[in-house]
Amino acid sequence: MKPDLMLFWIAVSLYGLSAFAYLFGMMAKNDKLFTVGLWSAVAGFIPHIVVIALRWSETGISPFFTISESITFGFFCTILIFLIFKFTNKKIRPLGVLIMPVTFIMMGWAGTLYKEAAESIAPALQSGWIWAHIIGAATGFGAVLTAAGFGLMYLLKDKYTFQIFERLPELKIIDDLSYRFVAGGFIMYGLMIVSGAFWSHQVKGNYWAWDPVEVWSLISWLTYGIYLHLRITMGWRGKRLAWYAIIAMVAMIVSYWGIPFTMETFHSGFRIEH
Image (tube, rainbow, N blue to C red; front, side):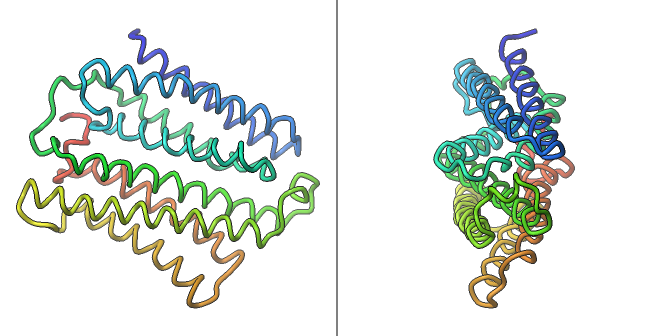
């Protein structure tokens, strides 16, 4: 087994340990398991970084052009956001109960699609806009997944009176945190769409072609725009927006990884067989 693949599965295994620690910690109402979950995530993040570095150094090609690489980079940004928040704000200990299982499942799927690093890339993908496009997409996804995690924390604290939930901040604070991460994700996802339009113009001569990925990306972006409208203009708060954040995350996953994998599109460079 190649070193990068071995390190990849080590990262997935540690993320799996983290996911189960958070889930069992929630079910057993045991704070200590949340600590295990956090440090397992930290331990998994280290080989995760090394995998990306090895893939990049092997060919000199940015490591996010296959579905596997795209997922790997997307969840690198997700875990980075999660860890930064966790080490700067220690009051929401169970936050990983949604983030880590999703990371474990998606990284495990990426492992089944793992391919040798490409030796060359299509001319259409050789654009400076790709960096803004991918970073916008990856950090945007990380932000809205974190927002969904806050949404779950809101619902649990609102429904249960267990000690682990009583230690969480007030519902208003959790609601505000979810809103801030959605706003950040909305901005970064907007960056992804705008940079993608300039990239499309550079390659094909038009800014928008109603490609299925473009359409789904627009739907996802508008979904979070509606969230912001409901909160800022309509005054929505609390459980309704918490559920909204969780459900909207599914649309984000479909648009970013589901559509490019199942359809022949302008984004087919991200498919594993290309």
